[in-house]
Length: 129
Image (cartoon, rainbow, N blue to C red; front, side):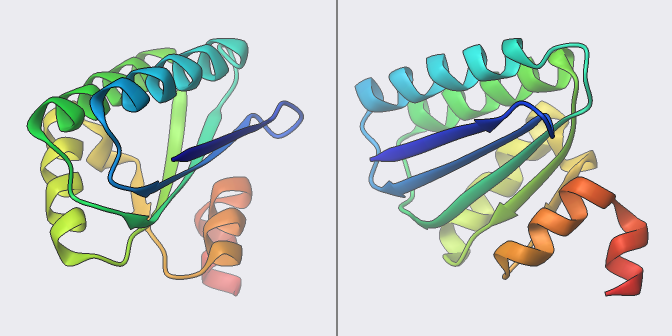
């Protein structure tokens, strides 16, 4: 299961992936994420990804994640905040982020509010928090 929300005013895309995502569901999610990203093209796009309940996925699902990350980078994504609890998922996502180049704009957070502050205000907000 997944949820995806767009805040056009802040150029912010928030999504959550929950449990084991099958290939067909991931295809729908990726399509929606691409469309949301295209809506915001030309702006500094920020993504907040809640992956705390996401379960390790099949290689083809990981490949879809890599491809949509590359698309995001080309479309203007400037910051990605991830919330991950599973070490196995974190390792899989680290590999995918390195392969796509997203690792350069990615931060991991344990707290929703800290993630959102960093996405909206950048490093200065983290230092003052």
